[in-house]
Amino acid sequence: MARHPTLDLPPEEVHHYEDISEVPWDIQNYWAQRYKIFSKYDEGVWLTDDAWFGVTPEPVANKIADHLAAAAPPGRSVLVDAFAGAGGNSIAFALSGKWKRVYAIEKNPAVLQCAKHNAEIYGVADKITWFQGDCFEIIQTHLMDLAPYSVLFASPPWGGPGYRSDKVFNLRTMEPYSLAKLYNEYALFTEYIALYLPRTSDVKQLAKVVKDGQKATVQHYCMEGASKALCIYYGAWNVE
Ligand SMILES: C[S@@+](CC[C@H](N)C(=O)[O-])C[C@H]1O[C@@H](n2cnc3c(N)ncnc32)[C@H](O)[C@@H]1O
Image 1 (cartoon, rainbow, N blue to C red):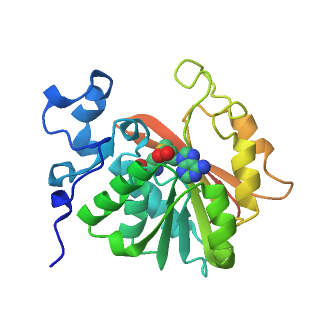
Image 2 (tube, rainbow, N blue to C red):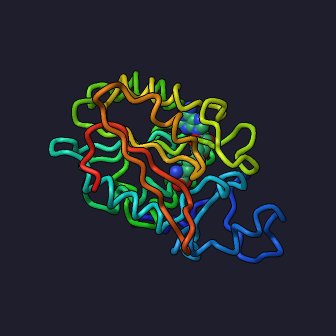
């Protein structure tokens, strides 16, 4: 019989906080929103302390998954999630039922364990193929055969100067990967690229990487009346 995921032992840096007294102060606001982040939190969701800051909340992840499912052209049946994190988006993509396979890549082994465990809680672990490593390398070494059937989603880290303070977020100095790095690398793999970026991202910079005659569409994803983030869809997605 399969073990219930909550009975597995988490690595040292992975937690399932049950009471606010256990939660580090800088995560307490996120923990207070835990059911918006993962509605099944109480079933034993795992996160590292850093993963709380980057995980896509479930309603947003589900909306993005709906949009990608509707907007992907026929024949594109594989989805690559380049920065799987704790699994927020990968789980939603698998739950959408659209994809023959979801390939999820995560560099940090402990965070990847969270994603696998959380996908078990949501009943979709067997629909996802996991890779631990650098997405740019893994795509080149393991996924190029799937390129003609693939779309790519990426929610990169939003590091760099001014993410919280600047009115317009500079995608050129985004760390550790600039928009140009992400776009240029992923364009070698597929022409269907969706990037999840700060809501204040510089629209001029978003447009600049688009080649003449190619299409790009921006969608904002909102919660409680405010934009949470945006997705830029590069390529001939059928975005309404
Ligand atoms: C914003 S988080 C992704 C959150 C994810 N969408 C979720 O909902 O849980 C970005 C993740 O990318 C990972 N990462 C950073 N560089 C990477 C790389 N080169 N390849 C794969 N993963 C990477 C980080 O460890 C981090 O977990």
